[in-house]
Length: 264
Ligand SMILES: NC(=O)c1ccc[n+]([C@@H]2O[C@H](COP(=O)([O-])OP(=O)(O)OC[C@H]3O[C@@H](n4cnc5c(N)ncnc54)[C@H](OP(=O)(O)O)[C@@H]3O)[C@@H](O)[C@H]2O)c1
Image (cartoon, rainbow, N blue to C red):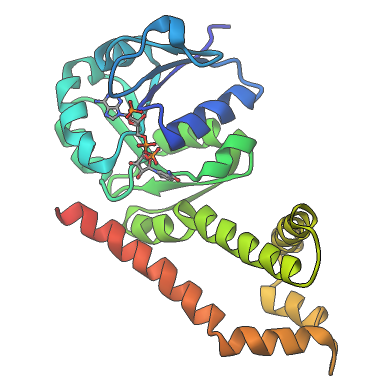
């Protein structure tokens, strides 16, 4: 069977996470990549092959994953529009609509997705946009590519700023929370490595219970909150610190920022 060629246009943080996730999946993809300044093929990272130009990448790839910064996209896509005609492009860009990219590269089929960095270890969350003119085949292809990298969901494209604020940027919030919980352990005398393990594993365990039991998180919280016990005292401190409204405000701020990037 012919190995499918995936071209990562912009092998940065997120492009690299997707590349590593794809290499870790059972599908035997051949991966090509470019960066802003062309890298010699001899410097290719591991099983990924650097190619000299974005045009060559587009020509040789079955699927192109566009992973440059949003402000770089129009120039990059416009430059290789002829090579993109008839190709499938998956955009991971915040803020930029699939229709914009399709207008910059007429004849190119565009699917918009919002992944996150845990794709690197097969624990990503990738949300696929359902555009105004839905493309079931394109959505199925994106699902096939990203499902082995974690979980996938499909939403209307109008919700992609919200998705960016929640799961796209979300790993940063989680790292901050783990860091803070770990700091609490250190404050109480636990060594930092153990404290970080306790914090991260507890977060992962709680998240997995939500996903696997399918119950409302408030019910799971009630189950671990003994009347007059320790947990309820901690919850009171979190309520005083407005943890819930702070997190809601953070996600809304990131979504607003994503929306504003489109207007510039
Ligand atoms: N980071 C995340 O957690 C995350 C999550 C979801 C979606 N995204 C989206 O992913 C995209 C990339 O974000 P990032 O954080 O990965 O940024 P990044 O690390 O700066 O990666 C951008 C990459 O694009 C390359 N590039 C720039 N201009 C290019 C050109 N003309 N030709 C080829 N490559 C070019 C850069 O090359 P150099 O390395 O040579 O500069 C860099 O490797 C953004 O649109 C963002 O909205 C990011």
